[in-house]
Length: 321
Image (tube, rainbow, N blue to C red; front, side, top):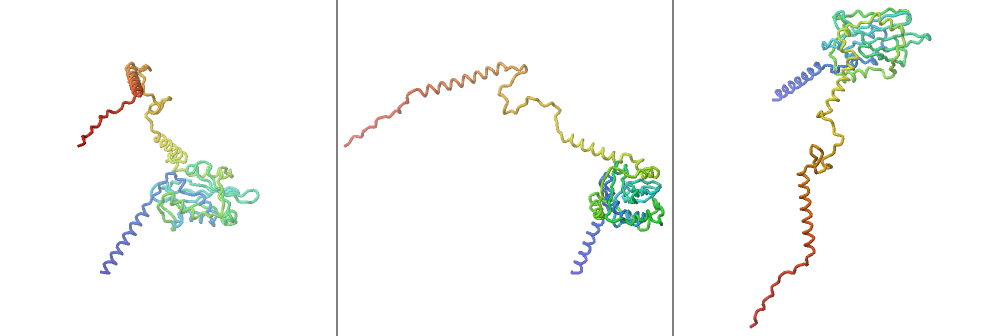
């Protein structure tokens, strides 16, 4: 008997665990705003913790931390993000591209790394205009100088261009399914270094980076899906809001009468089509008024009459014997 009970308990536990596993693996991203699926503050934080660009690319695609939640091609798996670098003098442009198909890439964001005249390195993370709209820029201020700065300005520097492409990925990479945005936000916030500052600005400092980006930008997904651009998504949301507001306004299509009054304030008499009281209505009112007056006169006359004494018959005396 005990063996049967133990067997049933094990079977029940296995069933519950299988149901839970199925529930986890079928979760899909539900937010239409694709810019919500890659937090650029998290990207800036990772960049400051990386030793070089190869390490930075690895951190972006780490299946354990899951910094990205982008699934642009909607194949049910988060897109691999490759890192491409171009440079000119004291300016390095680091480009993050989503690998969406064979020989198809989409710029997601760029990182401008530039040394000014004082020898200080400035960093700006710029969201691609298709993904994040115009002038979405984060300027991180790191609590400690990042080690990656040594990579850019050191004697052993060599440009990094990711060797990975569609169907060919590093051995550590295991694709995962995208999550609903609220779950992604909860997950990614844990990986943002709160000791740094992340200032949002609309001014891009490096003109050289803008020139370099024009030469190397990949926009394959945006070309085929112009309806999913930031402006299209924003305008679409505005239309939905306006339509919802209009649907909430119920109307009969008739104009509201300016001199409208509730029934309690309206007069008893109703005007006819010419705005005059009808003859039948006047006759009825006069009849009612005469009846009221007649009843009042009767009450007055009755009150003036002397009070009548009740008729009392004399009692008969019984003969005494």
